[in-house]
Image (cartoon, rainbow, N blue to C red):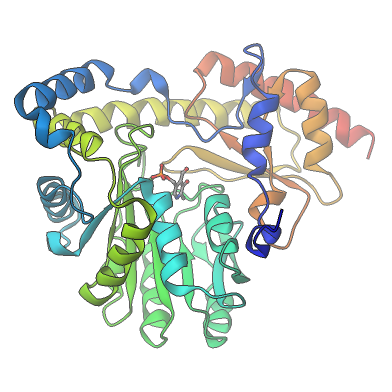
Length: 392
Ligand SMILES: Cc1ncc(COP(=O)(O)O)c(C=O)c1O
């Protein structure tokens, strides 16, 4: 078959491959990136679906406009004003089929083979995939506990990449968050460049400790920025509803690209979601999720402190769903994975999150396991780590 060479450079999602290996219910899995299903508001969605279908079935089942359901866009604009004090006109909001589609559309609108994309190191795998498909030439900036390395960012921007992709809140995979001085400095550096900032914020509302911070966009006057958002982590990932915020010129191009992709995001799901949001208290729902994830994260950190060998380093997230573990030099997280899976515990080895590969880190998800399973899983992982250290 004469496939496009475009696919040749894109790897299948390593995580999806690992998930296949963790289907056995006996396996304690810290591998997936799944929100907790215990907190899906199924009944409220059932009522919302019933209401929109019975009250306005014809409109809900008809084709709709590419930009998205206007009341939903208004809801998002109002929420930006209420929660972050951000003035975002609804005309600058495009509803997308998950924020993953926002990444795909940005790639379609900006990238030709060989175009530069600056990524965090480690970086979000789905973004690496989306940008790879359009032939991105990646460069990276190290990410640490206070955000990206600013000297590396300045050097990276000097090479004039088309896009800089950043996840400043509780990043996937590391759990790291940019502090305020770093946000200001990133914004200052971007203001002097023509690189477009793609700011991805699916986890921003899942803060369980510390002080909320405004997005980079709030500091980045004069820079070209696109802000991505999602209902996946605060309502339901299966609905596949996200959005992006872009200035009018860019919005026009993104709408054209979206028309070619899917005409519009399902109007049925948009209207059910909107009904859910207007008939229920989203803040109260998010507060429940935050509390549960905060407890799960603390439980994982306590178990790690109590049982992991001292040389092992880890992040201590203030929100989100992941933490990141750095093994001592020379220890392979792939070998740890083999041992762990034999003891029925799983995680994601770190290398797919690097565009240039590295072998001694791993990602642990804490949102999708109960505290009891977290304690047991970390205990098993600690045993595997000790064995691995002993044979080094
Ligand atoms: C950083 C980041 N961006 C985007 C996505 C995709 O989310 P959505 O379900 O909104 O497409 C994810 C999903 O895990 C993510 O971690």
